[in-house]
Amino acid sequence: DTEVTQTPKHLVMGMTNKKSLKCEQHMGHRAMYWYKQKAKKPPELMFVYSYEKLSINESVPSRFSPECPNSSLLNLHLHALQPEDSALYLCASSQEGTSEKYFGPGTRLTVL
Amino acid sequence: KQEVTQIPAALSVPEGENLVLNCSFTDSAIYNLQWFRQDPGKGLTSLLLIQSSQREQTSGRLNASLDKSSGRSTLYIAASQPGDSATYLCAVEHSNYQLIWGAGTKLIIKP
Image (cartoon, rainbow over all chains, first blue to last red; front, side):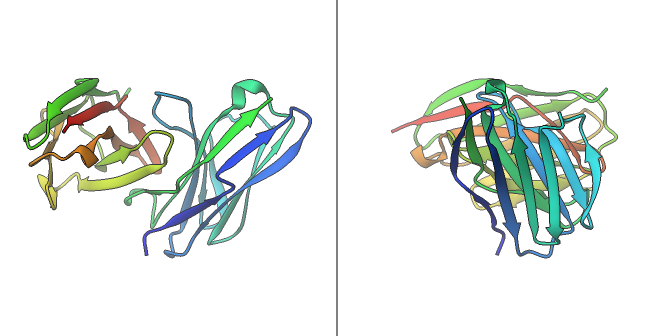
């Protein structure tokens, strides 16, 4: 099973809302990633968790807060977002840092 | 600084043709190179991963090659089908955990 799942598929939120994106994998991968993708652009790395510890934060604004409750789950907590944060948010996992990356289907986020 | 370029940006070919997508990178010090496909509004599907020590990988109608010395990779698609229509992205792993992406090639296969 090489599946990464993400919920919800679509999310519309106001600038004062708090919401969370969820990601799950059961491949035993030890690295998990959050990416942001704008239309017609390649993905941009936001965060990397390795062995459940945050190892990379690509200078992402604090209104995005990642959490890794266990080795299979990755959350992205959202608060006080801006309309320019509207994008496709992709979760990925890999066995190790330089292993093949597997991506989920993404969450389409719209901030009003 | 590692840069990845994909040419062409868009390609339209009749069904049944064989085709080649190109990816070039500026720094040969890579761990691996990975090809992905992305359908509109969807996530990325991993197609092939080539480790830095490998020259090519094959999966079904797809064949990817890697020439580190020249900083090039190609994705060969045999006997193209309308279902192959998608954006194809290449990415090199230049440092641990970090992929450097090309801008993608949008492929349209005409029935």
